[in-house]
Image (cartoon, rainbow, N blue to C red; front, side, top):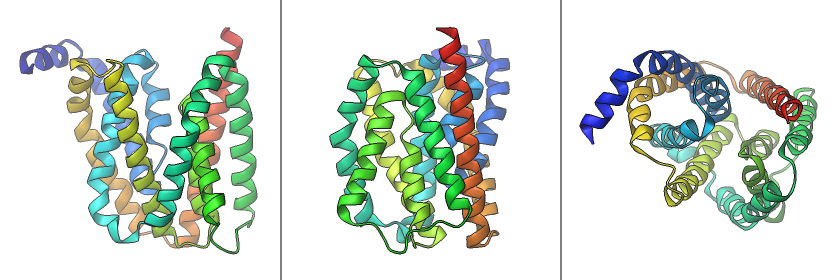
Length: 258
């Protein structure tokens, strides 16, 4: 196993070095906001490798990032909302997978990216919920995340919008987003393992990219501690709008290529 990992690293060191730069930048965003790592890193590294060879490693890195951050945010996590979110997520995930197998992906991605962009823009202009959503509304948000994740692998935006539109302080929103993604990433890893997608190459890439991830997470978290709550929310919404635009461009490109 070790010999295989070393051989892969030596044979692909140039690709691993270039991709580590993308991992580092995406990790800064993850450490600061609590989300965005997967979409940014997969979009960048897909220029070098096919998604099938990237996604399992990114899931491993996502879990490592969350585990690394959990001790510092444990007391700020809103576990009650996460329970309802996960309930909706698990129930709706199969429906998203069904949609993926029945409907073309680009139009669905276009619809989601437009919705996320407009909602984030509305929040940026001052829209906020006056009170924390009910258990039913929270479960429905989790269901939306499950459908989006099952349909095209992007389940984060509904949950991010949910937390950052509530009256909760920024630290609680960020911590809860991180904890929710840790739960869903562990579920995703289980699925990848079952399908045989996690290989020795996945672990070789994981070890090669791990230093860039940990350093980037530290840099992003350092910036978070220095930013006030109002500015943090604005930056998070701008990041979310940027990710929506990135998803929109990718969907248009995939649609034109079909």
